[in-house]
Image (cartoon, rainbow, N blue to C red; front, side, top):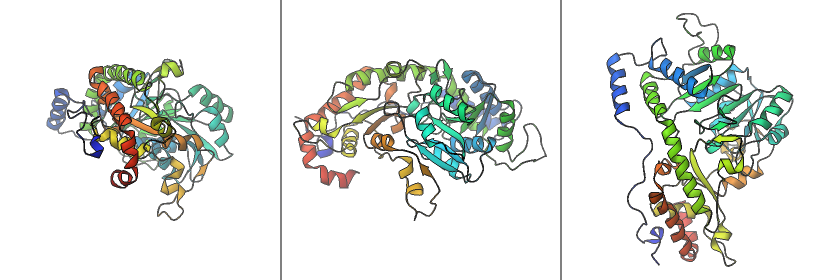
Length: 424
């Protein structure tokens, strides 16, 4: 039995998987075109930004799209456009990237954390309803990992209480629910184009909507409170949250290959799900078509599975912690996110009253979110890797690495305490 790389043995895999982000000569050429144009900023007639907005709106089948400097900026603009004011409450999932909540806090609103569904890791209508109060002014539905949230149940509750839904689509570009693209299902959809996202310019974001009045406010708020197409007047307070022409040009090239990437990642994810489900202690997050037929396409930002230490250990003994298991995978040459996941209400800015920037929040429930954070292992873009784009012959090394760790689980358990200090 070969020793684990984490314990000094040779790694199972030394050649890299496919990288992320992906690019080719197209990005090189469009960057040169922008450079030579000497028009590097702003969203103006005939600009790269305007062209990308048109193409993204067509892809999502919405009438309005506005490019902005980041997904977080997009959330802040969306909240402001919907009239969120200091003290207003906004329901957000207890499990999401912290920016979903801090966008509310930065506007002096109050994020209210609602629990997630244990299978999809997204909020539902029932968890949203439990979080609503007389101060609730909006809900942010996060399509986490590329899996669309239950928009039917969320919309039913939102309509009953007159609360608009903002879709946080940072991880779900290309996902669809009942045949409709995520981002097109609520009052406003917000996308991120940071380095790990399905299309990326390093940073950037976009806001989409069906509503003409909201679209006008969004365009104004990203540009110093200046109405779209107006040079001088500033009738409202706004930010400078525009996107550069270089980034917009890259995103046009990235959007053109999105569907090919999604198809390849779906194949890779299906292979991993079928193989890892047979290994003790590993439970892949169910494939969307098996879990919910309303999910007609998945964004495949990541491939996630839960790790059960006791089942993995077997024979009545616990196996390694999830942190040590992830470190062992990484040492074998498998790119995996090593960061321990933290439920949003447990972030220091919300949980620790002595934190410098402690912010007001409220937690309706978070038990499922905390349980998921303690057990999830993330592969793919969440780990900064294009692993899911690989053929099954390459992905077989992921399975072999888990099998190798399982075979060595007793050695790993003996070294658990020291490994936890060194690697975690």
